[in-house]
Length: 500
Image (cartoon, rainbow, N blue to C red; front, side, top):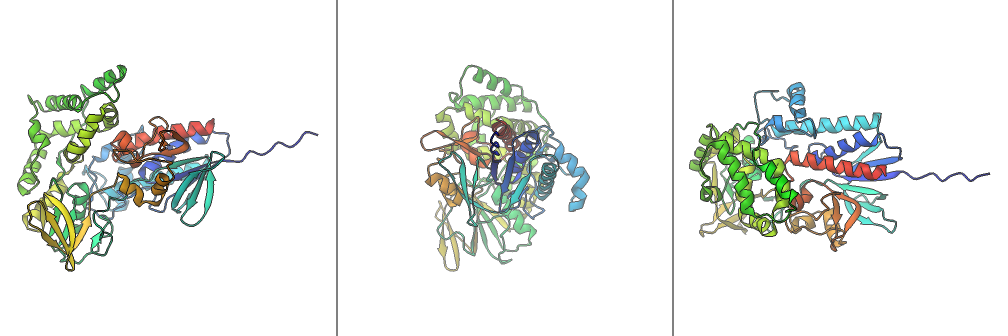
């Protein structure tokens, strides 16, 4: 009598995080894994709001998309999925279904939740079962059998064959020791419970700082608001962009790769190609680089001028080109040599971010209204914040401090080592040397498999990272289009591993 064959245990996968990027990963995997004969157990763990993630779960109607709605989608092939969903469903959320290129971000959040619900229904009906929990993963370590042992904040410990980390935004770097108190706020989106007449100082003048100002406006805040940073530079004002077909950049990237020049191209060369696209789109002879790279601090005058340009025909060329460049940023970043990467991140990243991460004209008009009636000021030269009496003193390079009652850290998502150490799971990955901080942000990962690279440079088999934590490798990780592309690639990698 032949012995009964041993029953093979199920293949277990854990996904930590399920915002828009994690939802896209799950969608790609469910569509692939329903045909796999392997017994599979798939678990998704995320203590936050699943689907929308942080950026798209804001409750404020004045927090708008900064990319046109018809270019937003969590489907890698169907770029119009959100637009079609919006036509059917926006009214149920109290938002018009058309006529607004930049609807409230919470609408895209509702769409992301719809995508997640649809994926989970598909998984229950025809594919592998997906178990969803709201537990917080705090440690992931490789065991002696080559599997991954995960510990949760609840005390539960479980072992998996493969782990996907889609953690979304890391906390911003701590700005001052006092941060986190009732008058030094870390949450620039949901936790703005401040006295209506308080003097509010906001650290940061880009998109997150703008979010704080607009949230306070929507709340009816009456006290003065100061947005401050080193540059004092607001995002550029977005005009009505049109679909633009790049004439030179795709060929340039293909030619550089054909000649094996990854990591060997100078910043000036890449800038020249983008500049040529802009020049031809705008019909200009040459770009005044000194004006582009060294803009003056923002003020009512510059914001009013930016609005005038955004509402003219000329801006369609530049901003349409920049919108078309976004999907190419990871490839361009890969081409750059080390000196070019260092120069971009140390000298020009602020100007680059202000131009490519622009904000809609309707939001700019609201800020301008606050400036004109004295409720809002923008100031450059911020060098520090320190306690003063019952509030704080914001210090500036010109030695003229400003007293405020409440401070909000609006420096945006964190990418550096300090931010990695602020979250239990990423802190554990660094302390165990399973992962190493990337010098340009996030952690080091293999470009083909998305597997984490450890302190010795070797990959951690079966431990994948996607989204913001890969910023140092691909740079443009906070653009939905690029995150969805990453998620589709990772889904192929993980599905292939499970099939094998």
